[in-house]
Image 1 (cartoon, rainbow, N blue to C red):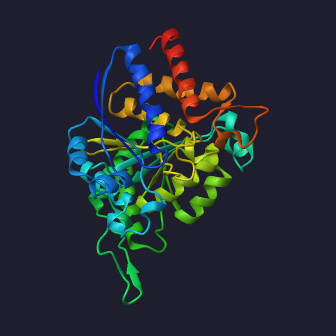
Image 2: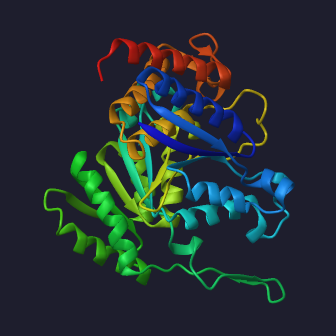
Image 3: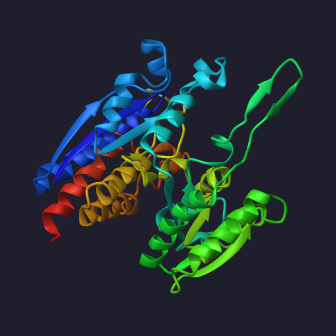
Length: 365
């Protein structure tokens, strides 16, 4: 299997966690005889500093020529004073739009070994396994008109969707639900917003194509509560852009740390992969970052861009085994150095690689 991967590590802890994820991919390639070619380019704040733009032309060109793009993180306080359309995050939005991926997959599962990390009771989170499917190219983040009129003290954004945009992301969500527990929850605000009324009506249309999948609708405010009180009741959760951003981040409470959450953006010209955490500039360069979200994102690269389901599953099982054996990064240990073996970012990456090596050597895939 050949895979041409573009890595845009970005800012803050992005380079640290990305390095560990790529090392895991290289371990898989070496052991299984795959050919993974890795190219590195700049994006975000570092690109602003060196190229004067958050998305240099050569980065975009390399992205469009690749089989998959792996992003670390963008942003930081250093660039907060810049106008919104020139900040590091603008580069990420431009990249997403250019690649065309409209379905953002965000898995959130409760690892039993991390139950104590969650502020929720273990009996609430145990066994929770949710896949968020977030529409990524519409809604408030991309709708027009948008403006901040400083002279009048007004600002506005537009939440906008077309039926076709909803249909295409809904079909992906239903297809994934068919492969899981055949349950889909669609989230909207149909009691207030016309765009949500269109969303709900369109999801119901698409549901007719998938008679084996049970569908329910939840308002976004009640869904925010239900995720915390009964997360095990949900399997695939389909949302528009803003609601999906908020709810999937909220699901970090289930896993015990934002550093545990991976994501994949599919459906466009080139798939884009990124852990959902931010750049965390306060801990950058200190070896404190949790690389597991990025490593789990590497598993999604193998699953959705390389078609290597067995190898992807090995990475996911290896992460679970490392946690079962008591290894933690500082965010997961929460100061408990008695019960856990607390590792740096690099040490955790090495531990996962060694486990992947062992499992690939001993298991038939």
